[in-house]
Image (tube, rainbow, N blue to C red; front, top):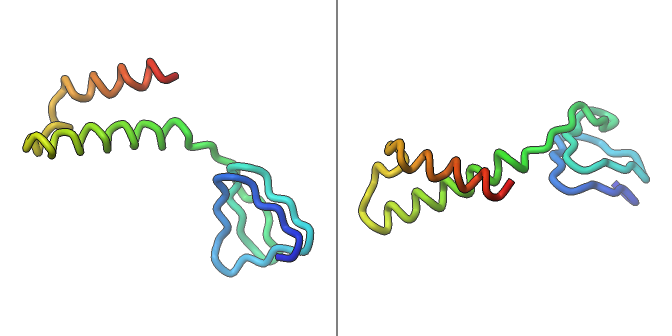
Length: 86
């Protein structure tokens, strides 16, 4: 992997061999011998939604509300947060 440039948010499969000087663009999934981009995927929205839900769940646990995510009002609140953040 001498001189390879791997972009942000990339997944390189196990046992993948990258030739010297290979450039992998952001958000790529790479596999094979030699390594090739097999798919490009941007999961920013999904990751952000997961983080907001995780935070909301943690807040519920701190208040001993262990089923907060099962409450429709909480799901509506998460949706509103996501719309505000874009």
